[in-house]
Length: 341
Image (tube, rainbow, N blue to C red; front, side, top):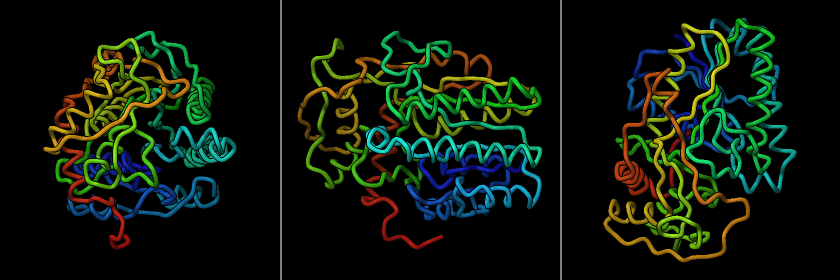
């Protein structure tokens, strides 16, 4: 199968591209490299022993997207491309709506012109908002609390309406929780630009000496240790979920929603302790005020993915931290100063 992966040079995109290649698929990657590095794809080629067809294309350039589809048969699309920082989305909402929503409309328009109607969309648990009715199931109400989450919610609505209007489409909406970890080789991993927005990459940068300490937002939540509890999922398990969704869509039409998570929550302090064990050093941290809108507890019910896709997360928190530390230790500044693609 020939699979087009948007945002394929990014964190989850590069790991999924690797898994697609290793499963024998041909991959075209579209990425504008705004928040990613083409070095990730060079390393994907190194690990897999196969070639990535990389195009530096922005989804806001509709003509360029059309041109890629016009070149030849694409069987399916996995759509990761998008801006993803919650805090930045509050400061720059128009940029997020334009990039994420308009970019997706351009992509789907190009797919429709080319007769490509199989799509896996990278959604997010942020569509559930700050709901504390856990575990979260696919039928839980969508109530995103920030522009980033609302772009995911709006794109889900658009794709759901598209699937209802044209039943020949096969669409998977994958709502995943907190991706962490790295490929076991340590050659590809998460490389956030600027200050990390998520806990584990921040902890990793403290461990490697790039930052002084972890700021823990709140220690008075109604949880066993007072810190927030989240569902962390290894990025390789997440990549496997995308492949499982593609296999499902090869034999089914319609619009489908699946949570991808472990179904277990870990607190901030548990993550810091697990990473300290992996790194062989204690990670310093300091408590500060809660962030507005943060739920005390959030974790997935991923039973639908198991029943319908045959997928479940296999890796635990210790392996997530060990793999993430292997990547961070070998690449303290990510892909910086590496050769271009």
